[in-house]
Length: 499
Ligand SMILES: Cc1cc2nc3c(=O)[nH]c(=O)nc-3n(C[C@H](O)[C@H](O)[C@H](O)COP(=O)(O)OP(=O)(O)OC[C@H]3O[C@@H](n4cnc5c(N)ncnc54)[C@H](O)[C@@H]3O)c2cc1C
Image (cartoon, rainbow, N blue to C red; front, side):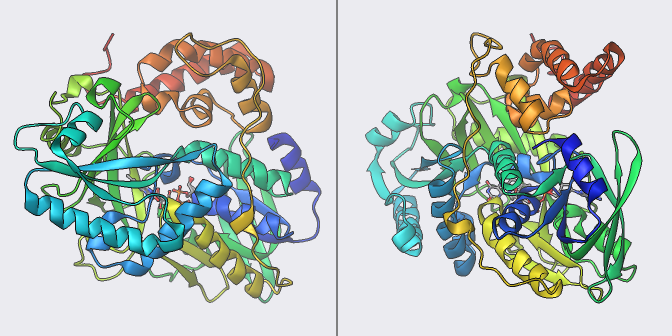
């Protein structure tokens, strides 16, 4: 996946693209992969880095969603459970099974959650990845040695999926590219003219050079996540709002808070949600929240209230109560949710997806979950093919393997880290990383895991990027400055000077 070569392809293409996809999150990259694997000529445009929006800020679960089961959203749970098994099969390097334990403080809880999870097992049916069961107090303590033991009666254990969201997304983009998709990041879509009858013209700006481009397309898929209504607005001024926004945050703690291979599922928080404490990349990931926000933002930040809520809720279940000083990194993401009635609370809005077709034929795909990205892409590409008058071709992604990145030898970045200098070179050469943050936040996950610790690697990363991209010392200095601003955003106030 090479940005320069792709710009050459864009500039030299005179005939219309079959499909232009706007947005390089899970949904957009899923659409590019689906379309390319059917043989369509597809161009994907992402305003910042691939995956830099909501899709790198998830809880990293491939799940049906036990919570949605409680809310009676059976068809969503069933569909997501089916997709879970497809992701585990097609991308085993980026996704794995994970055991979750609900600690119970009374027989009533054990029975309630034990029965609920049996229903979850049943819904998975043929796609099940491990049955649930009630376990004893001793077994719960053995598997979760740091759980609060006072009043603990037992636990309910079930299996779901965990994945590395940004890593899977980059691997999907690479596979789409190998299959012919033309993908460019730092390309901001600014206008969409025309219609399905006359054909579309999409104009965008290359933010690295400020050059403007206009491309032709038979069909356009708007997969801009929380910005999808903005995109509809630039094509059709009267577009009604389809999407509403809900922010969720995560904090990352040391592994000592959960020194095990099982995750804790806290089934009922003060706001009626669930909270997870999950082993993640040698650390403990805790989240999330569901805070309604009025407008979309490219740089959402955790609020003090959200951080306090997560710390307090986790502290009720963890023997050592985490404090702000324990936070190694924290970040926020905003969910695109289908707008229904304005009075419905964000946490109660469905996580199902929907397609909206504007009068000019622009296809918008929104809502949904990371877990269901493939299904969303299938629906969107089917619709785009109809609208663009393209030859109808069958979706093949159910059985399409997403290969892992190649392993190349290099110098270790740090004795404690699994990455080498070759990983950075590959990120630039093959995975379209353009900035220090692209490498350290999404091609590797060092920034979201431990924001202060990664600072020591930024100069080396800037040097390799500068060399690979042919940039000068002033560019590298600019990178160092903007990366330190990014680091500050991953650290709640007070932790910036942590040793
Ligand atoms: C806190 C939180 C936790 C979650 N946890 C889970 C989970 O554990 N499991 C799960 O299945 N789901 C989870 N989700 C849901 C999941 O993350 C989202 O449904 C999914 O990432 C949305 O992907 P997307 O591609 O639609 O949006 P995005 O990832 O936001 O992608 C949209 C892209 O469009 C780009 N864009 C915007 N405007 C333009 C423009 N003008 N030109 C070009 N590009 C543009 C943006 O930069 C962005 O990259 C979670 C969500 C949140 C917020």
